[in-house]
Picture 1 (tube, helix red, strand yellow):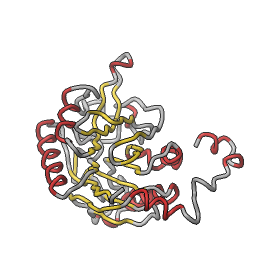
Picture 2 (tube, rainbow, N blue to C red):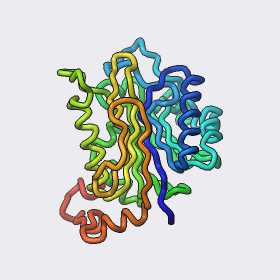
Picture 3 (cartoon, helix red, strand yellow):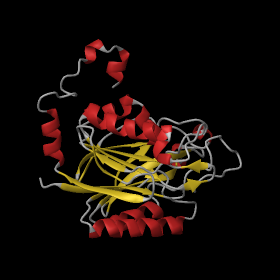
Amino acid sequence: MSALRMAAVSAGFGRDLDEDFAIVERLVKEARNADVRLLALPEACLGGYLLSLDGDAADAGPPPLAVDGPEIRRLAALAGDMVVVAGYCEDGCEDGGDARYNSVVCVSGDGVLGNHRKVHQPLGENASYASGDGFRAFDTPVGRIGMMICYDKAFPESARALALDGAQIGVCVSAWPGSRTNAAADLERDRWKRRFDLFDRARALENQIVWLSANQAGTFGSLRFVGSAKVVDPGGEIVAATGVGPGVAVTEIDVPRALETARRSMGHLRDRRPETYGTAGHAA
């Protein structure tokens, strides 16, 4: 297989879906012109994120969209021959009731390839969203992918479950803000930004997979996002990054070869001893 050109986005998105789709269309066009085949957009890029993480009852939140609805079909049409990953608020009415999920969808011109509902909810996010129930990898034209959303990556079990399910590429989309207390004037020095980067590198390294991390940029409501979209190789090295502002991190990796090289001597998945880990080992 030839090298795969991939990109992760740092950009701001709001409540206006037409404006969001205009941004998405521009980013997809630029990526296609750069021969990108896999593009990761941020969490909540269709409809924006929450105004705060305090469970504000006055915040109606982003518009709920059906995974088989016209907006996701529009996204798939824009993707065309590319594979595009994007975050949105999922209407869970098919499950009964009026549940909403913080979700991420993977599409190509052929339609929906995979969908993930955020499992781990920070601070007051559970006031706005129901929780997902698992992590599953899926096949795409660019390889087997596993997806997660923001706080999901703070839990090693999330990425490990995807790697054990055969994921070659992990894609984590985020609306990760800077610290709420002792905020740094310079986002590059923000402690939550450092954690964001550490989680990205650790999840790639411990599972020896390629890792794409997309994030919101700028401000929305009371939140100031840290940007820092990046691509990390299976050795935990950042090979492309945007910094804290808007941008696109683009690189080219021969994914099967990179995984084979990383796992040749010390294979972290191969060398596991799950019988010694108790319930944690069985869960992962």
